[in-house]
Image (cartoon, rainbow, N blue to C red; front, top):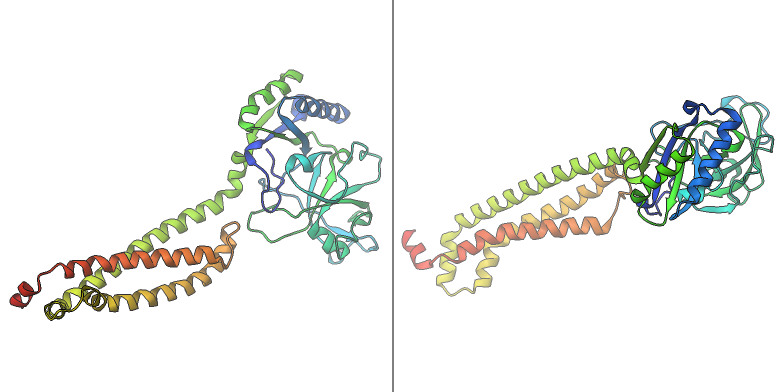
Length: 361
């Protein structure tokens, strides 16, 4: 399952499978491993329903990541203080961006000609292009250097994504051709035009037919993404529970305050009814103080909610500091609950017989 993601997850996660393979454990080394990887890819592409397949040496949001130090093409002193950026580094095969659902904005994808012995090439994200070349327009066909002086030419630009955590700020990333730095430990990414869960058995059977001893681990996007989503999910659940408890305490407090206020004014309300006051007038008199408290509390809660949402934005993925729909919905919901809590004791006071009430007083 893939994990190369764009910032907004614009693909269907159920349609992608991720296969972890370690060919070195099966006895494949060097050119044998590269040939076997190509056979595996060709076999997977023939499976009905598979629309794209590719390799990646490492995938975004997986446990562990790799960063590199890059310099501008004019740099000759490769001390770290002269570095232009410290981008995330990924090694991928041709077709990776299509399989991963990552949009190629400019330039080209890798080809099978981008192999060992050919000039080094890279596909970078927009943040990398801005950091190294000032703009995306200047990045294509320009070069940068690694710390050992190796020159790498940019051939394509892809959209920014999430690489370490879902709540991270945009950061530079570069994708290198796996053919120019072969590895026996890879992730195969397969995209299907239907639910990938149904494809998993067929995928395993196809790969096993090439070599029974292949070490394989097949997972769906949902399962793999669970690790990356765990902190956000835990924070959301904890905040939800605390929010529910806070709402219960608020409702209980409003109900208690309204009940006490009405109970202290029963004689007054009874006199009003006895003198011919309309039910609406009596009801407003009973709820007046509660309404004021409710309005003040809603305003204070809205202000504190805006301030707290800034903290929430650092914890929960795609939580924005100011979301008018969410904030407005919360205020309206709490106001309605508050009105219900005050309505109940007020209705109880309205049902009391004023003659009996005055006799008791």
